[in-house]
Structures are given as C-alpha cells and as structure tokens.
Image (cartoon, rainbow, N blue to C red; front, side):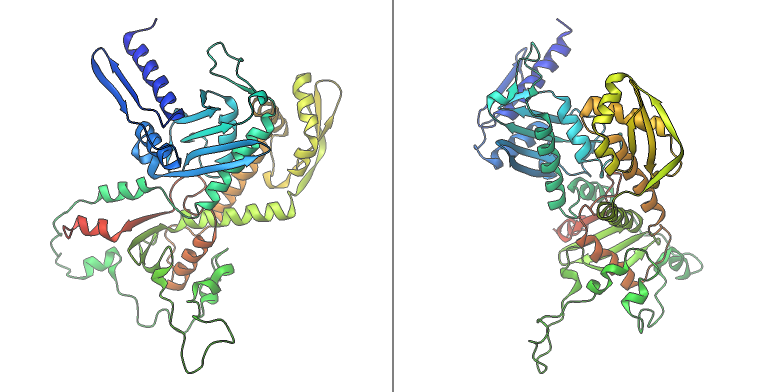
Length: 456
C-alpha cells in the first residue's frame, strides 16, 4: 500500500466515478471518522445526472455543459461535455462509462482530441462525462485485471459516434460562451473613486477614446460600402440592416411595417468601440463586449474550412518524390489509408517493404517536411486509427491564415461594420470562441451590472 493520503485519494476518486455512473444512488464516504463525501440520490433522468455531475465535477461544469444524446447502429452515447471556453490544463476531468462501468480508454482521448481540434490549443483539454451503452457481446471487459479498460469490437463505430455527437452538440451551442468568462469579468470590476480632472480639462478624457464622433459620420454611405474593406464581412452585410416586418408583396403601403429593434438580436446592437479593439453592444437585457480580432478570426477560419470541404484540398507535386523509411507495420498502416490521405492532399504509394513514396503534398502547407508529416501520420494511425496529424496541420495553417486575414486589434470600425460583424457571428457556428478556445465575447446581464452599483 502507498501512503495514507494516496490511498485516501484513490478511494475518493473511485467513489466519485461510481457516483457519476449511478446518479440515482446516494453515496457517503467517511475517512478516519471525518466526513469526506456526501452525495444524495438524484432523480433518474438527465436533470438528475447533470446535478450529480455538478456535485462531483463542480458547479461551473454543470453551468457550461452541453447535453449529448446520440445513437448509431445499436450503440447509444449520452452524457455531458463542456463548452470549448470551459477547458482545463490536463485530461483529469474526462470520464467514460461503458454499460455503467467507469473505464479509462485511449479511444476517448483520441475522439475528444478530434472533436475539439477546431476549438482548443493542443495544451488545453475539454471536460466531459460520456456514457456508452451497447450490447455486452460488442465489448470485451476483461482486457485489464482491474476491469479499468475495455476493447470494443468495432472501435471505429464508437469513435465516430463520440466525435459526431460532440461536434453536433458544439454546433448546436451556436455562439454561446462559457458562463465562467462572464463571472470572471464581473469579478474584475471594483468600485473606485473617479480620477481628478487634469489641468487640460475634458481633453484628457477624450484621449482615452471619449471623443464624440463627428456629426453625420455614418450617414450617406451604404452598409455594403462600409464593410467592403473587411474580408468576409460583406457576405452578410445585407443581414445587418433591420428586417422588414411583413413579407414582400403583402405589406400595406398605408401601414408601415414596425421597425425591428437591433437590440433584440442575440448579440445586440453595436454602441461603441473601445481602444479600437473591443466592440460594446447593447442587448435587451445586458451588454456584450466583443474582441473584434478573435471574433473575425473564427469567422474567416470557418469560411476557409467550408471552401476546403467544397473544393477539396489542392495538391502540389514534388519535383523529386521523397522516400520515407518506416517500420513494415507502420508503412502498411499508411498505405492502407492511401485513399483517405489523397482526399486530404497527400499522395503516397508503397515503395518496397518498410518504405513509403510521397509524390504530392497539400499545397496549403507550402514548403513542408514530407518525411516528418508521414511519420506523424503513422504515429496517429498506430495510436488513434485516424490520420489526425495531417488534418490538424491543415487546420493549423487555416487558423494561421485566418489570423492574418482578420480584422486586427487597433483597426477603427464604423457602426455598420461593427453591426455586420455581430450579425455574421450570430450566423456562424462556433463563433463563441476563437481557434484556440479563447472566448470571442463576454456577455454581462443587466441584473449583474445593477448589483455592481448596489441597485439590487
């Protein structure tokens, strides 16, 4: 046995896993006469499961969790996964349960990595509790003496179900951001005394960005012209204008349609730009602060991904095909996925035992180390059964290009440009976080702001 502290932690962790697997059962733990854990029984439904997960993993997880419920070919996946903006520094908050049994499985780590690849940096990890239910004959539970590992008869089906279920839930979340971001923002506010006016008078305040806009600054110009200089924004410029109240052809000329109030949009109406970096928008019940660069980076990234999916990945032929030496088993795995790799822009063929010949590489990668890329793919195939390295490199390049093609911090935007950006965020999936898992906006409810000033 290890130290008393290590054994106590192991016991507590095991009890927590069992409690997460059976939320309709109450659990209690006393160590050396000291109450360590008390978990009352919850209702036997999804709300009860979420309440138990919140009690074990923390209230923040339950506030930022997405419901997962999918089924494919007799295999059902349920549970909860955290928003990308609610991420952790390690994988300790990732739990997998198979037919009610808590297990540790590398399949889960690979599936989570693939599902969150577009949303998190490589050193950040999502939090989740996923439950897989399938016929007992389709899973082997005797892989490990402690029954802590399992082996699926069709691991590709289970992995595809996990990746597909998570991506569907992330897409359905829209531009929703983590509540912890708003709480951290509110916690950063502290009542302070106003600074004394300087000798220069009001001009000192204007240096901080309070200079009033010139009269008629946004008059006389169309929205399309206002956003023409920003790549990716002109597509939805027409949507930024208030929508008409009645369908075309049915409106009564004598009865003008009621004007749509922009504050009723999910991200509200732009009111100001602060430090030429942040857009301040007003909603019906609060305030939204948008990081213009992070938001537009996500919009451009999603647009590039769509183009890549619609037109395929352009390939660039090597002047001299490169021979990559591998182990015979690694080479065989790579050649077996040659068609999949070709769809991603990498053309390989067998070159004797233990070698692969690279003829073409994705043009998007530019000058790249073909041998290193193939070895990384071989490692991914051995570990996860999927060529994730190439996909991640393409996505990383897309992210880099999107970053350089986005609205920069320090760029002054007009009111139509800011509103066009907000409308495009509302129409774009995953716009609540940038390509690295950071939030693109923070929403502060009016009730919370009123508490800061003692109005509530």
